[in-house]
Every structure is written in structure tokens, then in C-alpha cells.
Image 1 (cartoon, helix red, strand yellow):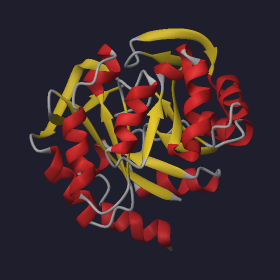
Image 2 (cartoon, helix red, strand yellow; image 1 turned 180 degrees about the horizontal axis):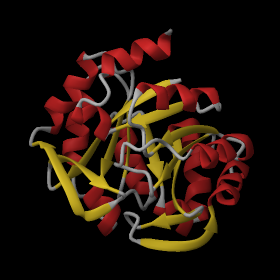
Image 3 (tube, rainbow, N blue to C red; image 1 turned 90 degrees about the vertical axis):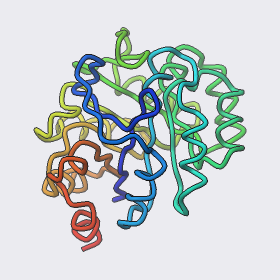
Length: 238
């Protein structure tokens, strides 16, 4: 199972939100490029970068920083947040990002999703952020009537191979992932599932691997020291 250290960006800084709330922000540094290098130097094989300003506004807020992060490390970087158009996808992938994550745009523009999947294949990842089993969009500030697993199956039908599934209620809490919801997504979506939300220790990562998750994202846990990245990577390798 692949482990993805997360670098979330707001106003050019590395931050973490609690349950997606923009009024519950903790800052973890003013140099995202240095943070990317730190996780790569500690053995990370892939980075997960989110433009929180972009996710909320629909406009690129930290894109040049994200490009600089991708250029600064020798491991692949995936990014999402504010990716609303085909030209956004083109820009990021041509700049050296390995994968682009579509969230709000996947809900709102199925035709665009279909086009970029045809062009870029598995370099396109679907991001599904769910609250009480239903998809949330626009930086988690708007709800929808889309049931998360059903929406994932629809995206798989368009050709998507990978989904990042975030349980909003557990995100940033370190209280453990929503294993039943993650298991349902793994078993029913038809895609490889990268789990996000609630990871607080290495046992949580092993539990996600046990239910068949292809990957897991860790954010707050590695920033606070609840998880030592090198130890976690060693445990997963073992």
C-alpha cells in the first residue's frame, strides 16, 4: 500500500484543517517546497498536494508553488484543488505533476472528465470527499445529493482507475479512519481506493491495507509526530 504525505496549501503556507473547516486551521510552515523535500528525503515515494484556496474559490491559488514543489523532488506529485477546466489539467500535467485530482469538476462537468480521461488515462484521479456518505464539493463547503459509492461507480464507468476517498468527519481528528465506509468504497467502486481522513497511527494504516485500500494519505499525524514517516513506511514494507 502506498503512503502519501499530504501538503495542504493556503495563502502559500503549509496548513491542516480540522474536518475541512476553514475556521479551524493550523499552520505547519511557510515553505512548501522545503516541506516537499523533507518528506521525500524521509523516504516518501509519492506526495499529495492540495490547493485549499483553489478548492474553495474555484481559481488557482497556489499553482506556481505546486509546480515548484514538483520540480524540487524526484518523486511523483499528485495535486488537486481548483482544477475546474481541461486547461487546468493540461497546465498541471505539462508542468510535471504526475497526476491531477478532479473533485468539484467531476461532479459538475462529466463531459470534461470524459475528455481528460480519454487523453490522460490513469494520470487523472477522482477525488470524492464525503459527509454522511454524500459527496461534498467546493472545498467541502457545499453538499450534493450524490451518494459517494454510486458516484464512484459512475466515474469508473467513464474510465477512471483511482479514487481518493476522504471521510470529512474524521479528517484531521487522528481518531482513526472510517473503516466501514472505506471498505464499501473498496469493494463497490470498481477503482483503486486511496483512503484519506482520520489516520492517527501506524495501526490505522495497517487496518486500511487489510481492507484492501491501495493507498492512504497522512497529514496531521506526520506533522504532529503521531506517526513517524520512516517507521510507517517500514511497517508497510514489512
